[in-house]
Length: 244
Image 1 (spheres, rainbow, N blue to C red):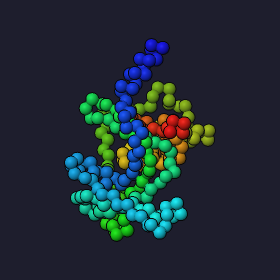
Image 2 (image 1 turned 180 degrees about the vertical axis):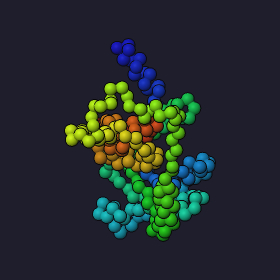
Image 3 (image 1 turned 60 degrees about the vertical axis):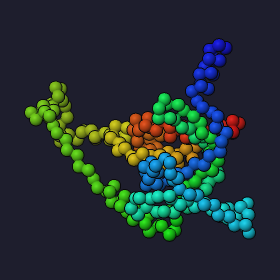
């Protein structure tokens, strides 16, 4: 009992839960918006959210009667849209939001996700957003050349190993077929952090629990990539219906 009580006290002191019951909104934004907000001064507002209501059509009868629009406070990026439409989703897996301080590593629970939004450029800004997408596509199509230097130039690596000479003739009919390389042995190309987070959101919307091996197969990413997203997994922490 003493050990159990000590463990309980330690866990409660490491995790701040004073805001655990607070309702929060989760919004998935484009990568260009996330980069702009990271460079934004903390003392200035990021954006303004406008709520539009149609009094003649109740929300229960017509969900489109309630519309959310976000106006960016400042967008220095070229061709970056100024106005976005927020599409709200109410049917999603229960989630919680966690935060960590840069100094000391104090972890706190910020609340439970009440609504989930997807940001999409407003109709009047679709042309500017199209230019931005084309520029990003052109950059991604540029292939980086790789040069490999062979340290051993004496041809030692090309010599046959002892016992390999005379085993199988090159013209033999019984020559075995080359075994295909397993997927796990091939070198995987790392995805961008924002692209990987979008894939993770869709996977956890499909089902609440995933094993590490399943995530590696679904995302085609090495397991080391997931060690860089510890607090992203904290956001995807799922509560059971009894605890909610």
